[in-house]
Image 1 (cartoon, rainbow, N blue to C red):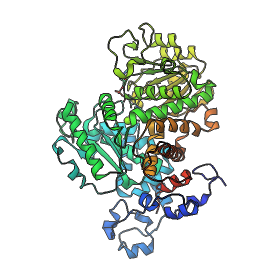
Image 2 (image 1 turned 90 degrees about the horizontal axis):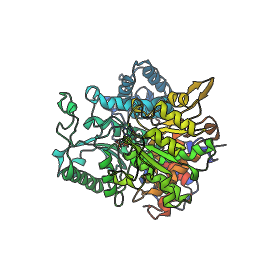
Image 3 (image 1 turned 120 degrees about the vertical axis):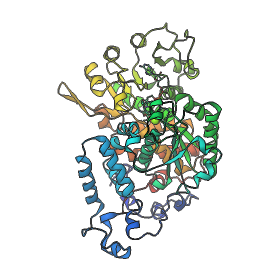
Image 4 (image 1 turned 90 degrees about the vertical axis):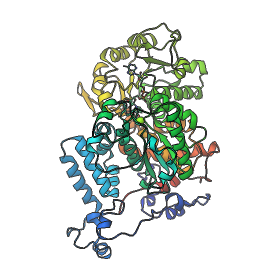
Length: 580
Ligand SMILES: NC(=O)C1=CN([C@@H]2O[C@H](COP(=O)(O)OP(=O)(O)OC[C@H]3O[C@@H](n4cnc5c(N)ncnc54)[C@H](O)[C@@H]3O)[C@@H](O)[C@H]2O)C=CC1
Ligand SMILES: CC(=O)C(=O)O
Ligand SMILES: [Mg+2]
């Protein structure tokens, strides 16, 4: 019998909700010195009774408390008669959810559910990930951030402002958990393609964390969303009487860097096992912080590195549709920010790993910005982009497509419509199956829609986008766009880091996980033109990504524990599976 988790023949007994150490023993692996209970051990719960128990989102089961539990915990009279199981509760949640008129109402309802009954929230998110992910993540999270001041109900996550300078470490004592393994931190300066949203950007770390739990089985208590609220350059927000953030102009320069430094040092001190995920920083700070910390601190930047891996995976998978060898590809990037530059740098390594010289590899990658093709004769070029500048004469975007004839076009601009009809038609003139990856989020900021990409390429494009699009039927044939989003990478990276206790996150992890993600795309998905796995399989994917991270950690001598041979089983045993 094939296991529905790993799809490779492991015994379904692993699905049982045994204690992790029992599962591990069952797997027959005794080669490790790992104390599995310290990694995935049961969460120690406070003993609660009565109303306090019903009001505790971690322990609450609401109508699922059995008669015996109702008696034992003083719940009689506090619940309606019927005892229901989690499945029935899910049906009620779904009926409620689907009755809402707008996505933002659904977002609010789901947030309330999380605050009421954490296990029911995560179980439902996992079981209905395709339907619910767009409501807790892109695109709805973008709208939620824009409306954060109006829809705010209950504080979640941890806020740090310049007024906390010098006392971040003691402030961490206020966080209810001592064992934090993953921190997603933003300063709110580049929230999706929406710009500087200041403290309203807290929706992003919260949404990313929910997906860590749902997509990779990271235990909720290990997760800490953080807002480094250093002010905002968004004057409209600062002047909004309902604005909840630090209502000053954004901290810059040394004042900014020293606050981040204090935050990172405090994390090392208080939560030494934590992985820090930098998220939605401005491009300049994103690179600055990554350069400063990647070599010494367990951290990565999701927009630079997670996005690069997911994009590289999509490019690898596209070769199975276009039947072109990866080493022959020419890739054009629109935008020269964090995401595009991260993609170019990982692609460079991937091309070189595939046998190209550095010069040859660089020549396969071209950048276009608002001024057109980035060419060597230009005076002002961003330092990280300069080495990719093309030898061509200066020309506009469509001219560059015509001259270079890229196989793959990637948009990371945050600008709606940046792939217009002329550009897509030109791609379709140059290539039988142009690969178009419109990374920008949320949907309102995508470079082009799925419908546009298929229509303007006469149905021949291979299309993926950062936010999800429904299938498109054109000339009687249905096309299935894929979602090219770092959600396929970062949760697995986090799980792999939790599993391996690796000291650092290194580039090989992103190269290896990109390959693995591409391998996860099933033949039937390739057949229908998708370059990413169906989102419903994201937990299986994250498990495989985590295994790759462990393998790289072991190969590079970075693992903090002696990893066992059977990494699939080991990683699986660490994954939180919500239920009663
Ligand atoms: N799908 C995914 O997993 C991810 C998507 N993104 C999305 O990518 C977008 C960009 O993110 P970052 O690179 O971090 O932002 P960024 O602000 O660092 O870079 C955006 C770049 O696009 C350029 N640009 C804007 N409009 C343009 C146009 N019409 N033509 C040419 N260049 C243009 C800007 O000058 C800048 O260089 C955002 O919308 C973000 O949501 C980012 C990370 C992951
Ligand atoms: C997906 C993501 O990380 C972004 O759009 O910024
Ligand atoms: Mg991001």
